[in-house]
Length: 295
Image (cartoon, rainbow, N blue to C red; front, side, top):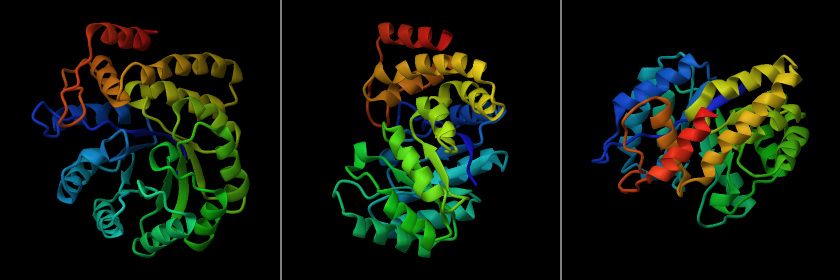
């Protein structure tokens, strides 16, 4: 159902903390031109945690949906510890003709899998929108087991995939072997850009990768090379992906570095800080980002 290259777009805010719609439209148009398979909003890189209200999220969903206008898939991050708000946001996403909801596991409390099952089952019963489970243990302290994912996938047809953001290809392999082989339409997507090729070779379906904000075509070309079994080309492309991955190590939070890379690659003049902060990048780091992009 969901295969290929998906961009979790950064949310660009101006200096006053308002959404910079003009710059976002430029980014979205570039991603569509580069043939990404879909765009993800309100994810971790999209600063879902920095939106001020449910209403602001709804307005943002409607805005992005209108810009995309069905030209590529739209996946909306609707995860929250408050189940009622997740269900309400799912309805908004469905009304805006989104293709799926990306829902992170409950965070902060470290719930056991009985409660995680309850969380997803209640949500699945209250929406027809396809659901992609978002497994991000570095941020939630929970690494969802393949047994739980298999149970949910077997019981709910609208739970259609998992985004696995773990630094372990073994996790991908388990989800492919234990879940995807039982339910053929279930998608297994990596949250680490550099795992695109290992994901696909393990039987997975692609990535939701932040670096596609900067150079989507590199990843789209890599995806096509795997499909075409052009292994000689893959060595070259993987080397480029490895170099681009260095962007994650240059700033803290890394979202700031990604925004600066978007700023440079699209020749914009945007606020690169996260919302409501004034995090500036010095010229030395900007030059390193420029160098990585050029290489």
